[in-house]
Structure formats: C-alpha cells, structure tokens
Image (cartoon, rainbow, N blue to C red):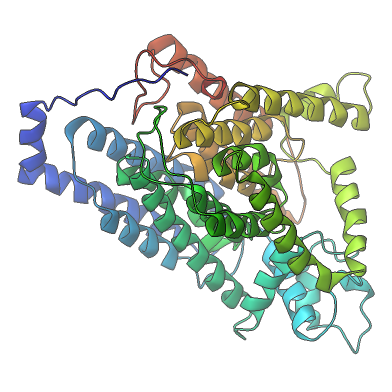
Length: 483
C-alpha cells in the first residue's frame, strides 16, 4: 500500500456550532440514557428465555441507538469522552452480574472445573458424571452441567480463570465477577488502542455498549471475556508509538521484553479459547520480523507454564474436541445447505475448513512481506472473525464476540449487522424453556446468514466507502478485508 500523506480536516462551522449547543448535549445524553434504560428493561425480566422476542427487539433498538451515536459523533463532532463510554459500559454490565445464567449453561461447567481444581483434582481426569461420589461436587451443580459425560473441553488458561472465580466462594457470581472485570479492562484497552491509532475513542462504544458483549459476558458469563482481554493486551504490548491508522508510516518497534510478555499473553488467549490461533500470522507481523522469534519464545514459555500442571490427563480433552469438530452443529446455514448434497458430514466439514483456509490465505498474503499499519492488521482480524461465523457449522451467539472485539477498529456494516443477527439463534430457547424440547428450524440460520450479506450488498450499491465512521484515504488500495 503506498504511503499517503494525512489530509487536513476542514471544520464545518455549522457542525462546530451544533457541537456547542445545549440541545446537542442533551440529545447526546438522551441517547445514552435510552441505551441504559433499554438494558434495564432486559435486566428486570424474570427469565430471559421467556422474553426472547423482547430481547431481540430491545437489542435491535440498542444497536440502532449505538449507530446513531456513532454517526452523530462522526458527522457533527460530538465530544463523547472515554469516561462516558466507560461509565455506561460499567453500568449496563452491573445490571446483569447478579442474575443466574439463563441463555447458556456453560457457566455451570466453569464452576465445576474450578471447584475440581481447587480441591486438588485435575479437571481433565474424569468427566463429571464419572467422578466418584466422595469426590463429586454438589449434586445440584452436577445436574446443571451440560454434557456431563464428556471431559472438559476448555484449555488450561481457562481452567485457571475458573479456579480464580471459584476461589471467591460466591459460586457462579464469583466467576461472572472475574469475567466482567476482565471485560471492563478490555473496554479500557480498546479506548487506549484507538488513541494510539489516532482514532476517536467513542468508537469503543461499538464493543463497550454492544448487546452481545453485555449479554454473553455479564449475563451468561462466557470465558471469551478472558481470552479477549489476553489478546488485546498482547496487541497493545506489540504496538509502538502512535501512528496514523490506514497509512504506512514509521513507528517505533516494541522493546524485547514487551514482545516476550506479549507472546505470553497471546498464549494465554489461545489457551483460553483456541480461536485466536487464526490471528497468529497477524500477531507475528505486529511483532516485526526482527522480534518474531522472541514473540514465539514467549508463546512457548507461556503455553508450557499453563499446560504442564495438567499433564498427562489433559490429553483426554482431545476426545471431546474431536467429537465437537466431527459432529456438533447449530445455526450454520452453509453447513445445512451442503448437507442437502450427497456429501457426508465429514466431507462437508472438510470443504468448509478448506474455505476458511482460503480466507486465511486471502487475509494474510498481501501483507506477508512488509509491516502494515495496525489498523490494517486489525481489519483483517475482523475479516477472519466474520468469515468464520459465516462458514462454521456451529454458530452459538457468543462465538461472535471476537467479531465485536474488532468492530471499533473496523466498523464495517456487514460485521455490525451480523454481530446482532446471531442473537436470533436464541429463538430455540423458547420451546426449550416452555416444553423442554430443543427444536431448531431452517429459517433462523438463513436470516443470520442473509442479514450481513444483505448489508454488504446494500453498502456496495449505495456507498463507495465501506467504513462509515473513520473513512480511509480515497487513493488507498482496496483490501481483502473490505469484502
């Protein structure tokens, strides 16, 4: 990509005048208040599983309000401070911390694993259903553990987070508290990264106020909060001096110690949730050619330190992981379509895996020989997260958290739409909560897939610029991640 000189911003007098008017300030706070009260409506529901239509409607309204905030801040120079972003983020998460998990039962497995490790047992040793009675945890907890006949699938770093939460002696609330603290720290680091990239800090609201981040972490307590924090810390440590996002400009290389610690943090991210493995080439590029060896050493040291205490029983997790990769599916539209062909399930999954391998090649090939801007690398991370969601046979809503994580740095319309559309998958909880029956349909996966595709096509037909909130220079080369 050629070097492009930054363009001088021209302040529109009418825009600046609007920025200073009391009406503008009141409108800004009105939007923030509407977002907070929208979350309060959800928090006051007795059982979110019985309020799925309301959840879908309210979260759609929140997304519209967030986009209005972003558009107005971008076009009329509203000053949304980092403090405002963080205060709203903390408040809306506080509404859900004390609620029991209703949209997912993964948190019960987290607590089980954490209690096993606290009691001196290896969580990879036996599946919960096979644990002897004198070693087992509370019977009520065991009854709520999903797939109790399978050994835990969660990697070592996740196990240490579970243990930290269980050590608080507050049960599920303890683990949720730890994860919400991690999530708030992630919001703060996103603000800091945006400043380093010379982007407005109010873009952080795309993650900090996003319904998916709030519901899946504060309400359901998913471990992705820890993995995303470790990943963002690693990225932050690899970032040198502030640079102009979207432009190739010199920047200081990170110190060797920072690169090593970044490698350790990245290993923690991967060993919390395996998905950040797909970002490995981009992380090497951020580290720089002369420091990538140090980064890899940090990964090795961190991985060994986290995993060695669980050997040799950790090998039992591979059986569960293999079963998941071969047989599990939920809301995957492309997988459902391909299963209508004579192809077997394994063949279909192999083809889908090949398609994602092509996406990896497309994402990283143009930047394999030179250091790109930070914004360009994060844009490619967003592209990979979005592509994974469109291809995966198993699409639970919280799988889209990594997409939401990169939206502040790459707010493409298709990503914003998909990050909300995945919540439609919770339709399955309506008959499950009322009748105890897990009934899937074909329409919901289609809508989840069609929504971002339609948004992308509409954007292509109506605008030249795929980035609405911080457009790139007009003479910059088109990137694969814009697709």
